[in-house]
Length: 197
Image 1 (cartoon, helix red, strand yellow):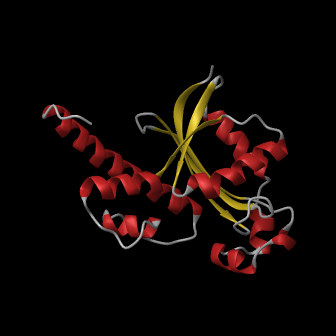
Image 2 (cartoon, rainbow, N blue to C red):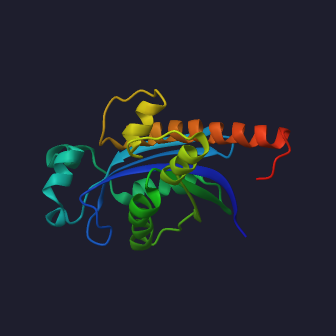
Image 3 (tube, one colour):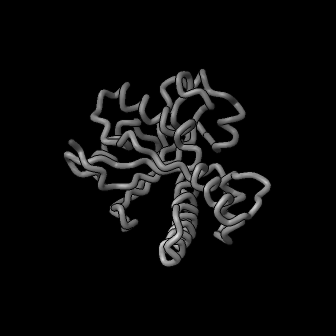
């Protein structure tokens, strides 16, 4: 039985939205322990193997430049191997991200399967999109939408750029802290008042 001991915050940029067809072109991750103490981070430009299947709009949004990727890019195995080093043997990492269950995680699972590397990621995930729903219900705050940029602005976090994987994973971690902190305070108040949850 492998124990969950890490949180693996991830964000990807890809050649399109379909994990069955498209590929990762940028991979960023911040790995922490369960108390949010950082144990490692990385961002890699990832070399696509089938650029012909890419959506032009996705490449434009991600700032993909074939010459830059040729010079700086790495194989996807580099990113996966680093995650495997940051999640201790016989333990697992819980993936955290914004819309991670439906978008990022299928790409990562596919990459592990194709490379035949051991996948240390737990079947548990924490999606900040779902947390944002809980936050809005608990706080009574109405937001125009639950996009990451909307949450970043709502919490007064620095909003420097979009479509950059390390920026997105960093602010996702900050949004996670804000929401979990708020919900924790609410549960503490409820416990002190001895109300039923």
